[in-house]
Amino acid sequence: MKYLKKIVFIALIFSGILSSCGQDKKTKSGMSEVEESKISLITAKELHKLNDSILLIDVRTPEEFASGHIENSININMRSDDFKEQIAALEKGKEIYLYCKKGGRSNSAAKMIEDMEFEKIYDLKGGITAWEDEGLKTVK
Image (cartoon, rainbow, N blue to C red; front, top):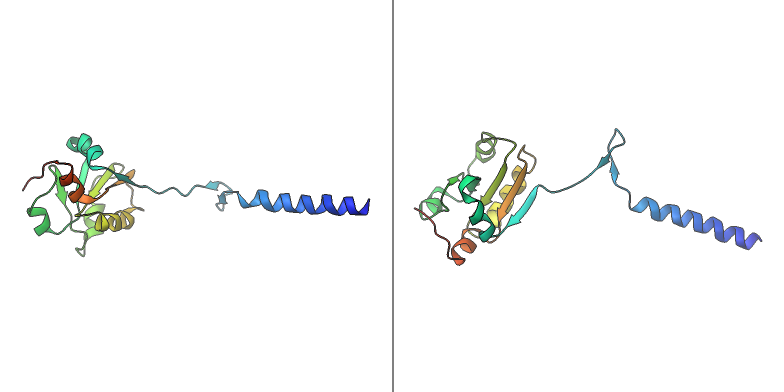
């Protein structure tokens, strides 16, 4: 009988430990905190379908932008000292789409602005290189 009680006691402790491992983080108010990234990758074909009415930002240098960019995009150089200020001046509450040459800088830029008040951040997978590889046009 003592052996059975020990087994039940150990089982209860073990089940309590397991159930606590999967719980959400709690905020000070006791509410569950959901950690969800605002950043998503988007393909060139998906971006091409949306391009007319979105906030599209080329984060490359002005020289790179001048050599060819996606139509309707604006240039905000990620490496400029006032990059965050320029982004902050844009209309909040919207989705924002970013691209660079191959995706590295736009990914870094997306992480820099993730805590700003934009609804969602989309990063062009493969950058303008992927755009051109799909045969999509650029403008100068």
